Length: 339
Image (cartoon, rainbow, N blue to C red; front, side):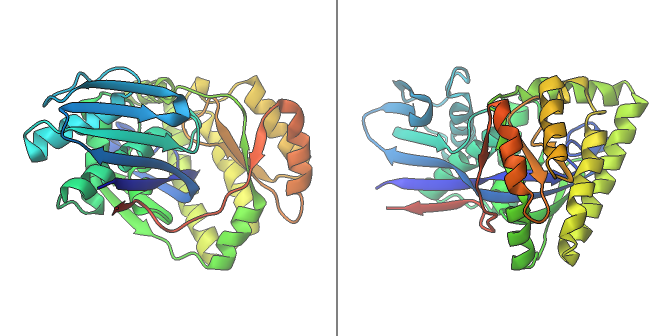
């Protein structure tokens, strides 16, 4: 018996950062995101040899240990161990023996929600294997608790829900409450968005926790500029929702540019001269707006390029050493199956 799962990565189109506590607790947050055909994969092969084996072929990493009810959550397989510990504690109450292998289509720190999506994928595989009675909200919430509470990793709430539900979603955050509103975007509008939205990997990475912690400090310190910027990003998510539902796709560049100007005010480390140069080069080549994906500081950026300007934009970005990546939007979230 082999158990498999896959969960999609996401593009945060608007409202990024307003899902992070304490802002979302005090003011409420709103995000619009969409999943793409890049995934985090997990395979579990149950065994009876009293061992647990962790493998990540994409990172050329492997670790094994004796099966036990609680693993020390450290090292490269921190996320895997965090999920295992919670599964044993909350559901099976005994050690498990298995080999687990994971693979992610994007590198860590890429800004596509890789860590949270991997947690959802790992958790989904355990749910499939052990036939746990967990629905979509349960899985997303548990993934969030494992990352933020059990492992103490800084971050927001959107990624776990995007990976679990999939598709275009307008998400609302009010303290501990999360509401996922699926959007019925017409197929031709989603196709137009994918055609015009250039996804560009800067060939750099970031440590999102540091940026998010700076953002959190600004809110706790009642830093007016940062808080007002987050208010504007919340407005941006509503603007993006209306543009996509109405098919006003050529407004999207301006909406992205509006959000990027305010996102940079949330924390100093969100951008740097290299990122600013890439953004300006894309604008000069025909992009009407864009942003960095995720917390900022590196990873993927994307730019809205109306008409056929995407080709000029891709060419203009070549000197910066990164790479444009083709993708499609998808509507499916977490999938699990047993062979």
